[in-house]
Image (cartoon, rainbow, N blue to C red; front, side, top):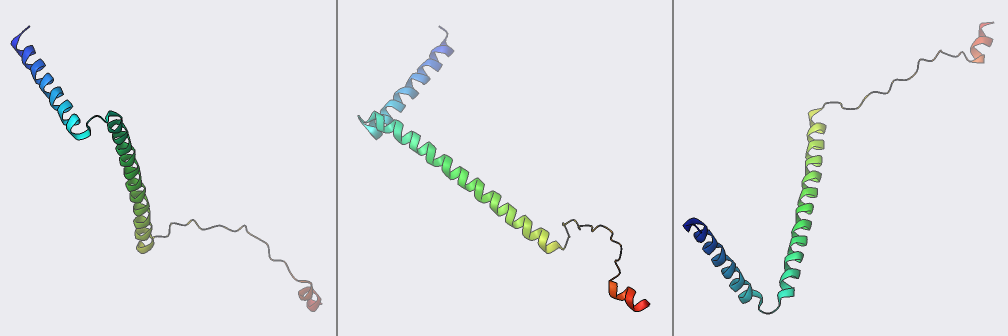
Length: 97
């Protein structure tokens, strides 16, 4: 075993030992609580991130709608009406006689 491999193995074992000691101090014998707390924290973080993204989308839509409305650019497409021939009323034909 080379000296470099020994050093990396030693550093890894020290970090594992420190993590275990920290977890023992924080959670004690309640190992199940730690996993539930971690999962609950991740779920809460996901909900917060989703809410922030939704609020950002709604805000962006509102601001872009306001900017387009203030710029005066007409974004609606005019509806064309079909050409109709004028129809004479029966009274106009009676008065012409």
